[in-house]
Every structure is written in structure tokens, then in C-alpha cells.
Length: 336
Image 1 (cartoon, rainbow, N blue to C red):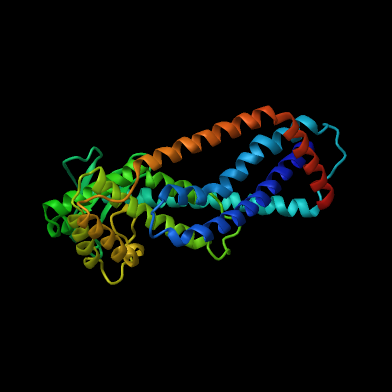
Image 2: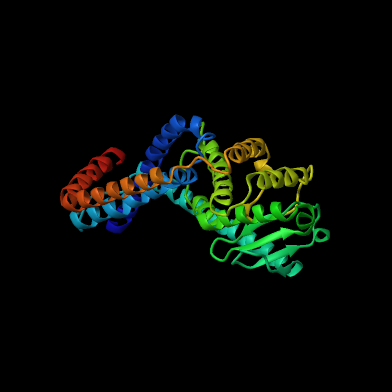
């Protein structure tokens, strides 16, 4: 009963903390979403997306579980009530669903990837240091314009044959630099991690929009990488976006693995904005307005905050454990 009670409190705490953090994230996203189109902050939106689950897990592992096993007497007479059992069961279902969703997505992508590897032909592309493959268009149900990095840990680049034929040299080079931007940012790994983070309150008005804004921001950041660090011509990248968007079939029921695509069906509403940003960059001699010094200042500030928070946590840890244990006692009496 001692270990069952501790596990139930940890699961119930994870559920309630996740809900609280989700409400906070929803409020913060409401404040910043208006500037999402002006300043693509993919890393910020990714952190918002995983914050509820990760922060809840961190609190449970670092505070709730230690306070229970250190301060709760082994021979406790407290019992698990029906309310605590219900909360623990809901948390278990939530975690199991997230894990199964992540595993199913990985397995589905693995099966489709294996099929693509059998159909495609290896190619050597300049500046690309991962395996690249040409996917024959006649092997696809519909000629979906595949330009994608597939795989979170071992990425592979797939490009359909008709995309090779449609783009000129500069457009193709710009497209490759966009995909290299996704590889550098580890966007596939981030998408898989986000899928593994359960959302307790998916019915919140901006819960689904956060995923869409984060996806759009990651695409725009890959565009910025292609122009700034890949030395791609903004007009060439804009032209490639327009050409690939026109190649998109009217309906596509083909199974496509999860990955970082140059352009997917969900990206079509954002094509016009991405093209306008690239045209503005071309007018300003290819410079995309991103302040490197401001980015470094933010990184130093974040590091300072993390270091200060860690030091404060270490110094006040015994007191924190006592306070958390008192909260657990009150919570247990409430749900008993």
C-alpha cells in the first residue's frame, strides 16, 4: 500500500500540474500569437508545446517522489480513495496514449520509409552530408512533390523525380539548403518528442493552433537558414516554393511518413507569407532581419536564469521537500 499510494500521488500530481501548466501556456500563447507571423520563433513555440508535460514530470521526479519517500513513514495508515484512484487512472491513460501515439507514428514512418528505400535510387547531392535518394514519380499513387528529410536519429533526404525535373539549378540548391536547415534544427526529433508529450487539456481554444504556429515558424526558420547560412538566393527559394505548391495534387491519399517537408499540404496557406518574406529579403540584398547579438543576449540571459534557479533549488531543497510533503498531506485528505 505504501508504494501504491506514492505512485497514485505521483500520477495524480502529474495530471493536475499538467493541467495548470497547460492553462499557463494557453495564456502566454494568447499574448504572443499576434506576433508569430512577424517573428518566427520556432524554438520558443516548441518549448511552449512541451512545457506542460516536461515541467510536470520534472516537478514529480524532483519534488513529489523524493518528498514522499523521504518524509512519509513506511507504516502510514492513509489509504487510496476513489477520487485519487480516478485521477491516477486518468493520468495512466494519458501517458499510455502518448507513448502509444509516439510508438505508432514511429512504426508507421518506419514501414513507409522501408518501402521508399526499396523503390528509390541513391543520389549524390552537393553540400548534403546525409544519405539522399531520388524517388521515381511513377512509383507513387499520385505525383506528390516529395522533398523531405525523413528520420529523427538517422535522417535521410528523399526527393521525387519530377521535383528534380521541375526546378532549375539555383532553385534546387535553395531547396536543399532549406532541408539542411531542418536537419540543423533537429526538427524531426522535436516533432517526435512533442508527439510523446501528452496534452491534458486538448480542448483549450488555442491548443491546436500552437502546433500549427510552431510548424509554420519552423518552416520560416528553415527559409531563414537557407538564405543566411546556406547562401541561397531568396528569389530562387521563393520560386521553388511557388513551383512545388503548383505541383501539389488536388487530393492525396498516399501514405507519407512523418518528416520535415519542403512543402506539405498543411503548408499551402502559409506559402504566400513565406514568399513575401523572401521577396522582402531580396529587396534588402538578401538580409533577413534576425539580430545575432540579440539572440546571444537571450541565450546568456536564459543560461543565467537556469543557473540561478538551479542554485536556489539546491540551497532551498530540504525546505521545499517539507513544503511539498505538507501539500501532499493536505491533498490526500482532500481526495480521501
